[in-house]
Amino acid sequence: MLGTIMSVIKSYMGTGFVTVVFLLCLAYLAFTERDKVKRCVFIYMPLVVIIVFLCPLTYKFYGKVSEDVTYYRLLWLIPVTPVIAYASVSYLTGIKSGKKKTLASIALALFLAFAGKLMYTSVHMVDAENVYHMPQVVVDICDTIHVDGREVRAAMPEELMQFVRQYDPCICLAYGRQYLMGIYAEENDFRDAMIARDTELIGTLGTVREVHYIIVRPGEEFEELPVNYEEYARIDGFIIYKNTVVSTSV
Image (cartoon, rainbow, N blue to C red):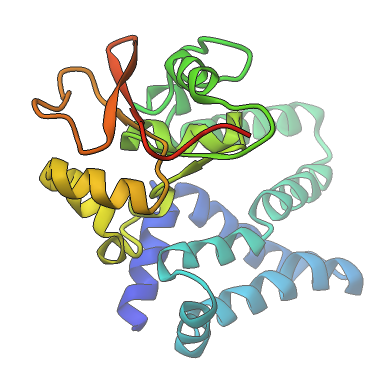
C-alpha cells in the first residue's frame, strides 16, 4: 500500500524540480521564520498534510469513500505555490544589495521557469476552436441531440466524454469519464457490448437503459445497425444513431 502511495507521489511530482524547491523553501522557513501564525500556515500545515497523505490508513479510508485513482487530489491541499512564493520573497527581502537582489530574482525566476515543462507542448493542448475552449464537433453534436425541457442519454467516444457535460448538462452519458480512468469498467455491460460491436446486445441494452443516441467515430460506423437504432446524422465524420423505440419527446 505504501508503494502505491509513493507511486502516486512520483507521478504527481512531474520532473521533481518544483518539489525540490518546495522542500528547500520549507527548510528555509523552518530556520528563519519566527512568526507563529506564518509557521502554522507555511510549515506545520503542509507537513501535516504530507504525513496524513503518507499514512496507509488514510489511503484505505479514502478508497472506501471515493475512488483510489483520485487519491492524488489530497496533494492539492499542500500550499506549494504560497510556500515557494513566501519563502522567495522572504529570502529576497533579506538581501540588502539592490544588484544582488535583482540577480537573485532573475535566477530564481529562470530556475522555476525551467523546472517544469511548457504546458503548450502537451498533446492535450490544442488551439481553441470556439469560446467554450472545446472541440467544435462536441458543440455541434450536443446541439444536434439536445432536447429542450428534458435530459437525453448518449454513448460517446472516449475523446468526447470529458467535454459533453461541460457544454450541456442535459445530456447524460451511458458511461462516462470514470471509464477513462479505469473505474467500474467491469460493471457496464452496455459499454462491453460497444467494445465488442455486438449490435444485437447494443440495441437491446440501449433500449432497456434508454440510451437515446449512440455516437461513433469517423470510419467506425456499424455495418449492421444495432437493434432499434437508425442513422440520425453525420457531423464532421462522427455518426449519430438514434433509438427508434425510446422517445425523446418532452
